[in-house]
Length: 223
Ligand SMILES: Cc1cc2nc3c(=O)[nH]c(=O)nc-3n(C[C@H](O)[C@H](O)[C@H](O)COP(=O)(O)O)c2cc1C
Image (cartoon, rainbow, N blue to C red; front, side, top):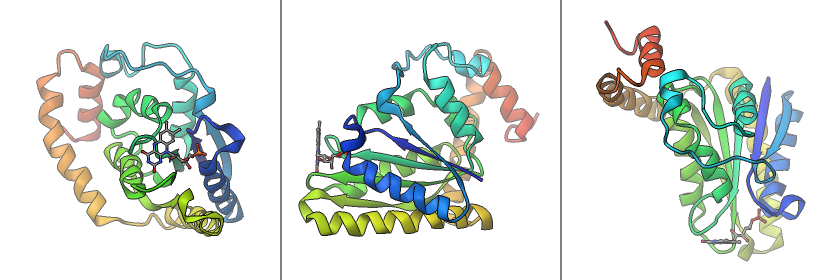
């Protein structure tokens, strides 16, 4: 079983959020997973240009480090998203990765994968930032087991507690994957989204060729 952790703070090894990510990956490894950490802040990932070629061909037209990251995410059973709170949002580095992933959403390429989200903040809005990462995962067809957030304003003991919680959640991510854990409320979101989005794919069938063929192959559009 493979678990990939995404780091997105530009502060490298000094990152508070990285402490949570490292603990979660350690927990996953203790539970038997093969782990890998990717620091997207150190990679060259350009902005999406909205060329739509991924929907037509199944391949992003921009040549940079995104392709390698996507391949690793697609090969993973579980993903650990992590970001500090930057202006009540994820970092620009993580948002850029999300924006490059419309194909993953349109074709629900994280179907069957599970995730965990981690954040730290200077003050608060932890749940808001965790929800951004969780919602991205659910919109990609995957499931989230939840997250851990910690404010540095709560002091060093709170960070230690969050590190321990992240380790436990990392272990639980592996268990969720092993038992194919069900989250009915997330499955309801998947189903409702596919029902709505079917009409968007059909409306664009002439230029979203890859999307349309994929939906027919999956049986999400009946011919
Ligand atoms: C550009 C920037 C924006 C930030 N915005 C917020 C914010 O809106 N709310 C908050 O509570 N903390 C905010 N912070 C504080 C960070 O979330 C906090 O220091 C976090 O622990 C940094 O994580 P890192 O060490 O992993 O980079 C911001 C920090 C930076 C540099």
